[in-house]
Image (cartoon, rainbow over all chains, first blue to last red; front, side):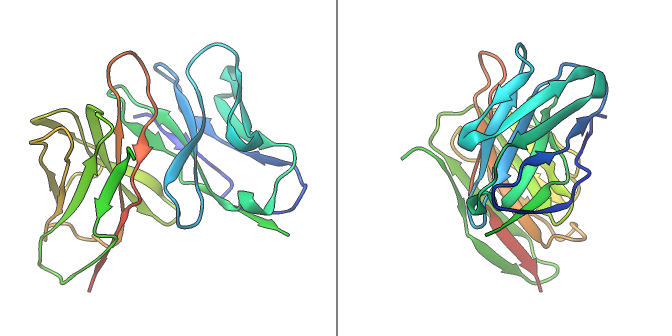
Length: 112
Length: 114
């Protein structure tokens, strides 16, 4: 079965710090990857996605992620975080029937 | 406005009762999904449906049932057989034709068993 791992459960940063959240996926099958974000009290929404092509993917709100096939990784990055980035972040992988397999999530707290 | 609505926002249930969570979408999406979110465990797939009158079990289907009689609606019933039903339930939908598509999520229903 496919799996997605997020090893950082809770990350605390000060504003303007750089961010990198780890995501690793299991070997096998076509790789379609997503990062979703859940702001407090809001719907889960898509930050970015990778299907094929350029391994460096840019998303909304200044986020980007790099697909590294040799490391089975799809880490999320942002050069300078803001207090408004405080949220829970989920990495996900598309399954064979379009369902998503999610990682356990990373809670990001940005201190003003 | 196009989107996904879930009702109710909060639901309380006594042990032994079945409850049904509503999910409606007006995005004209073919596929719909139910996920369960627990702290520290991310989202886990309960059931999904890619077309009307057809649905498949996800990773944690035991104790749940669904129906898909209309394209717009995908209600989830949490039965008394579900041993630990207290959780946050999220409904999602997506297109099917034409490749890989993102899933759009509703606001969720928080179910508490008393």
